[in-house]
Image (cartoon, rainbow, N blue to C red; front, side, top):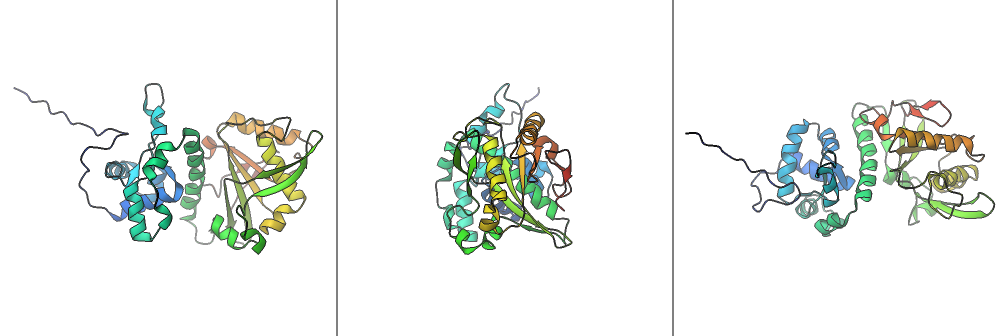
Length: 313
C-alpha cells in the first residue's frame, strides 16, 4: 500500500490564508528597502542587488509576499496565463514592508495604502518603471567593483544645480521653443532618470535617461503630439540655446535612450541622422534592452546614431 503526499503551493497572486511564521533576516530587510527604492523590481535584479543565488532569494521573496512585506502587482498576471509567456515575478512594497521602513528608517512618506496603489498600477506603468530600475540596478552593480569612480544620482545632481533650478517643481525638466514643420512650438521634456559618472581621471560625465517602451510613434508631423522626435528636439534645442547649461549647470551631457527592440533602436538612429536639426548632434546614445542586459554599463560601448560608440568609464 502506497501513500501519495500532495504538497499544496501557495497561490501566486493571492496571499495564503495563514501568514507564514518566519524570522526577518538582514537580507529580508535589505530586499524590502531595495524594492521600496525602485517602486517595482523583478526577482532577478533583487538577486543582483542582494548578492545571493536566485534560488535563495526567491525562497525569501515568497514568504515576504505572503506575510505582507512585499506585494505582487496584479497587472503582471498576463505573464502567468497560458500563452502569456514567462517572466520573473515583479515585486512592490507591501503595507507591512512600509511599516517596517517607517519603524526602522523613519520613512514617513511610506504611510500610504500600498496594496491599493499596487492594485491600481497599470501594466505599461509597471514596465516603464522596471526599465528605469534595470538601468539603476546595473549602475549600482557596476560600481561595486570600482573604487576610483563616483556615481551621483538625481538628488546629488540637483543639490549642485543653481538655486533657481533647485526651487523648481521639476528641476530636471526643460522647456524650449522649437521650430518644426513651420510653426514655433514650446515643448517640455522631463527625463526618466539622471546621473553623473566621475571617472578615474577626474572627468565628470552627466547623463539623462529616456526609457522607451515603444508605445509612442518615433516621429510625427506635429510637436503637439507625443513622439520620440519631440523629445530629441527638446534636448538638442536646449543644448544649442544653452538652456541645459543655465538650468543644470552642465557644460555637456549625453542622452541615453534605452528602447524595447533592436529594430526600434535603429529606427531612432535613422530619424536622428535624417533630421536637419539633429544630424550633427553629439547627444544621443541609443540601445535596446536585450543588447544591454547583463553587461557592465560603464564599459558597454553605447552606440551613437553615427556608427561610433561611447564608453562611460
